[in-house]
Length: 276
Image (cartoon, rainbow, N blue to C red; front, side, top):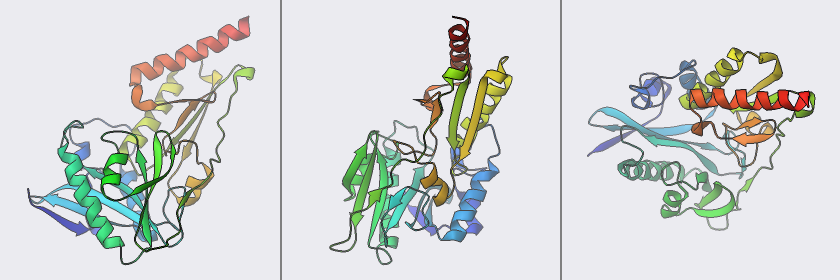
């Protein structure tokens, strides 16, 4: 399948598969304001983010983005280098390895673009077979610097003797209000991703609908910029963490009904502790 790569510009943001109308969103139901995804990309492009959009048979199917570390909204310190931000090929099932083939080609195109301007490219990979897999980045020549399961900081130097990048220390400390009989819900989200917007909106809806809403202290933190990334960095790093009284949970494992049940269960436990 022949694929054409075009530079990512404000004029073709509507072709991004994760923006409203894009292939990743087709046939799915999302909550929240998905137009924020286009706004996030527009703001980052104006800051200096670069990228490519991939077209197969004229249809926008994928994209890859990178930015200088000085502006990249990742907690990575590597002066003179760039950071691989996001890449995605849509239209295949997660278990279909074809999307990894195309994502590899997109990253190769980004590396070729970035090589003349930067001393190297840093990336955050996941110990996961299909979601930003570490194995894929290793195959492209990246080497692992440090791992904080399931995340690893990886590095592809373009110049001999380039300094190794470092990962910023976690700054965010989740709250625990159990002693006050409250459930502290700390949730991060980012407008860069429609799924993140959806999960944040779903959490607001579940909390607001709870009959004992006053026992839940919900705080949501938007992580869109480099400053917000460093200030709200948690371990392991992600822009979509969630803590319930200091205990991290993965919202990907909770459908709407299961999340509602889990919040209700934890609030009930707090009531039981207070009564005793």
